[in-house]
Length: 190
Picture 1 (cartoon, one colour):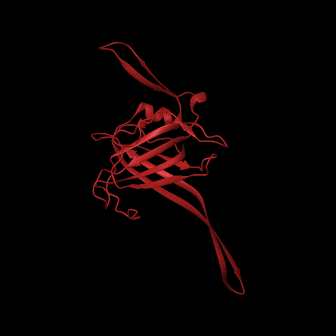
Picture 2 (cartoon, one colour; picture 1 turned 120 degrees about the horizontal axis):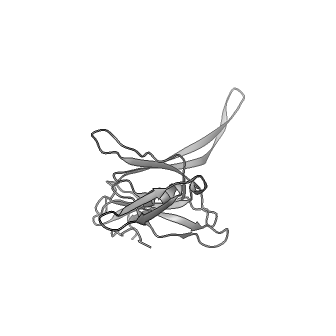
Picture 3 (cartoon, rainbow, N blue to C red; picture 1 turned 60 degrees about the horizontal axis):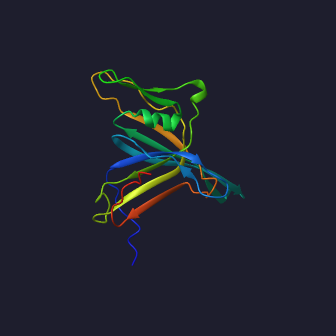
């Protein structure tokens, strides 16, 4: 007997971004090593629908609706230079020796490419109706739709965030997957 197809969604425990390497017309997309989104707080998905209405004889005769965009909004507690490089481009470099080490994310005009990436988030175990289970939400191909919110906040923590638009994969036409697992499964690390 299959597991139930509905569940509560409580909390988010982890999220990872995987840079998209290829999306061939025939074949399977490939991704780089997943990067942790540190301190993930929210993973929100919304969609835009275009509706066309046919009117005649002074009344509504029919309507047609089509999904035109899916957008993801993410907030996370800690800024990550690796996440910035994965979602808007640029490079991260490490230099120096203790006690003068530093790491730097740099963005140049030619490096501001807004590359495609995959995003996967997961509830904590028991964050679903199934005891010991979890829910994964996978967006297969995203591209940032605005510059990420960064900066500082006076006498408070600054929460990092970004928004991205989904596109269907060229190779498989997939946009997203929502997976309910009977037994909790970690987001793959490779």
